[in-house]
Length: 484
Image (cartoon, rainbow, N blue to C red):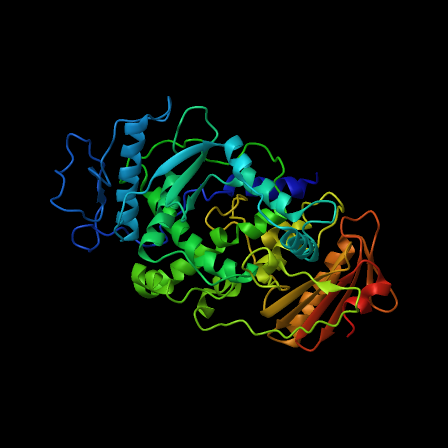
């Protein structure tokens, strides 16, 4: 694999799961009793800790204060009582940082990496699988030689270090250790999700990829910003447990950098949105945002556009021959029969050309999509850049998937702020087609080589602010899929 590929993948391996401590971004902790600014509070032992309060309060949970030391280590694992103490103290600490009180105690369980992999995936019907396969093929992320669900499951199976299940109101931490240990930073992140669910609700009407990226930009940005504030206090205000093996699944495995890059978006750019809100109105402004969540990735990439920006409605009429019919994933699940993939997904498509094994070239430089600090290390608080010339100005989109019974095809239309923005995207997309073995014919259509995972025919049509990408198995079938 190329040197740039190793560099990019190492960035993903180190950062997946939001484990890297970050700075507080200038937001000091607030004293739990007064609500005012507080000086550094040194850790206290259990014997020296203040008595339990007469009623529940911020910074205290189930018998433990946020700055109280507890006599446990992760070296030989944690028994049930030790785990309960760690969870209670972490809840108190999340309350202290996030300025919100838990309503109820959150159950926490641990699973091995192997058990988590076995839990992942499955459940998608044929229509949904076909639809998602075509969508990821359209993004030039997963070719016809592999299913998109399997690629996502493999990436998550290697990367996820914990999750909160709203349906079960439970946190599950993934551990690499044979003994039951807890990574306190990961626990803090997932506790924020439980707190969000209790106080704001995590339900949403977001049903498209870009809509979910916007929603998750707030949710994961809030959790990551809180986690970073939490981590910054370790060793200063608080004694924290040493890492409990929550850094991901070891080697590269089946981790797909393009998918990782896309899925990591809310963790990378979400904290910037939350910081912007806090600068305007503190944590209260962050809480208010749950009543008006971002409409798409654009508002997370450019926080100053939140909450005024809204995506444009894109008109896309079916113009297929009788041989092609729409693939409607709503037959399997309650979701739209079209896709909306926005700037974060497009950026992932371009970034993936740095690491694939098909072509030694790339359409972007590592420095364009990975944020490096002056010393050459990756910026742990904001590792990836999604604001590229080819993504800037995205105003809306819509994708339809079609099938003739054996093959799939798609029509993907995007609208941009200006003709210049549309032209920059079209040029970058054609460069990406060329990267994957595409050759432009005299009529302007592209034919992708037989040895490419994306072998097909593609037409990129620009009309003012609108770009329409049409795909079919052969150039002769492009008009059958979309008779423009």
